Length: 165
Length: 295
Image 1 (spheres, rainbow over the protein chains, first blue to last red):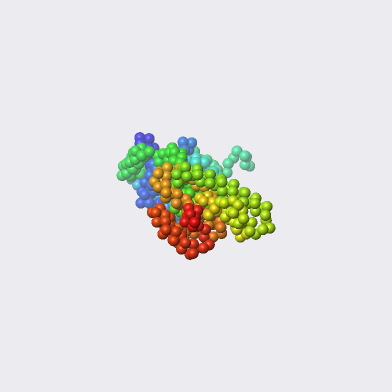
Image 2 (cartoon, chains in turn cyan, red):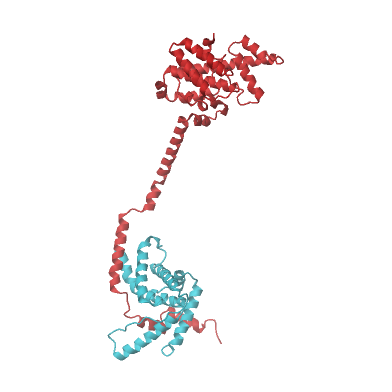
């Protein structure tokens, strides 16, 4: 039980953000988050020690997210709008306003990406997975992952050109 | 000019991103700052995990339990099936006969035509019947030899019967099924009148072995009753060999009644009843044990 608690505390926030940005819906994320951890507990015997726990965790999360897409008939369509994020309270009002604006632009751009590209970006940023591990979690090859990331980064750079030289 | 070490802009962008140097990565790290899972979910999920793990520890893995016990289960099932099959064969005379691979022509007299004839008989009677069967076989061979010596004379069989009492009607029995084309019944055959209590040779040992295996039944049946049943069975076997229908019917019931009269000492009454019986069923031979009433 102690081992599970350690794993949970280490991965809960990145997983939460992955699901929240992947689904774009806090309520759905709340439910999926519990489902994924419940799957981790129930199918712990299926985990192979050869695979990284992180890869396995995000594979479960990806599958749950795909179910959500199918349920919502989202296919590869972009999300309607990004979920707002509250900024840290210790910054000055100007800085808070500026950073909040930047964050919102980033999130909006990310929400506009096709979900495969968005997922690849999130798996790298939140899960810290390598190209191979992203491919393993999403069931595609390494080159496909690279292609998806290239498209995602090109789109982000285009939208954030004023802060991304 | 672009050398091989110079990467395309997209590749540079990707490489920076993978190494965490991309402005997108920095912007994302700032954007996610302070964004974490709701604390109320922590207690919920950790509590669920605790319950699940404790429940799993309490119950043994069912798959392994089945694996450990599957061979004893399979062995027990095989033993039960074998025992029940063996029991069925031993208790059912027909199945026993089939299991012993006895020819089908031995069934009617004892087991099929008259079910009560399958009642157990004493061991000494079994031996006696075996001897009678051997004797009948010997006599039938003699009769057959005589018939072969005089094939042209149609009255040869009665003549042989006159010369060899106890084998003449058996010769008839040999002759009639052959004329009717009945191959299955030809090889066995005691005559009802001339070969008293001679059973069909082949079935007797097999059926009697099964009877020997049930000593409780042997003690339960009175000897006289068993004897009468054996005679009836012999009679039916002989009637069948004569080409008649061996069905147990009114004729047999009447014969049983006559035997009871004899047993009770009413000999005159039995004699009259037998005469009536002969008028009613003239085609049927008189059983050997009642022959003396005709004298």
